[in-house]
Amino acid sequence: METTLTTAAGRLLRPWDDEDAAAVLTAFGAPDMAGQAGRPITDLDTARAWLTERRQAADAHSSAVTEHGTLVGSVTVSAIDRRHDTGWISYWTTPGARGHGVAADAVTALAGWALGELGLFRLELGHRLNNPASCRVAHAAGFAVEGLERAKLRYGDQRFDVELHARLATDPAPRWHAPSSRAISTS
Image (cartoon, rainbow, N blue to C red):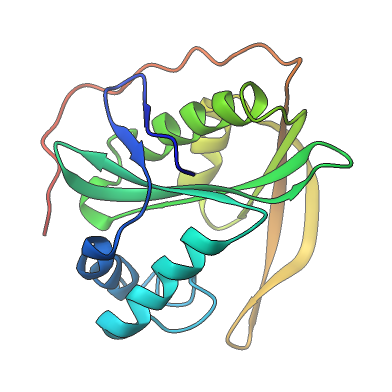
């Protein structure tokens, strides 16, 4: 996404740049994020390659989520299908930013942009059933539960069920409120 958006809580969604590589490497170094990139992010070169893919994707808009100049997460609308005006939302936050409303705030802002300015009608997202925090993000960002996809994801030799959520352009905008202000750890 070449647009910079400001979220309800004052965070910025901005285009990725090569200077984000160290923060991306740190984020994917967290044990629960290790398999989430589709391939290992193990050094600055693989982090830069991940960033390049985000910037060059033809059917996606991916943004760095920053707070006070610090990278605290990522939010993306991908798999954009112009025939059906649909897209897929994905997101992650750095370990120090979790529990501060970062993901819900960023997803709400990106979804509003995608359903408005980008002209999409339907956005979907999914989360592993063993990730209740991601479910809270989906609900806070106005995504309704639509069903269960059994054994959809595989990480290593383990399969995970996924709960599917969607938000339509005709759905009411969520009433998202930032949690009480807390300092975000950058470690």
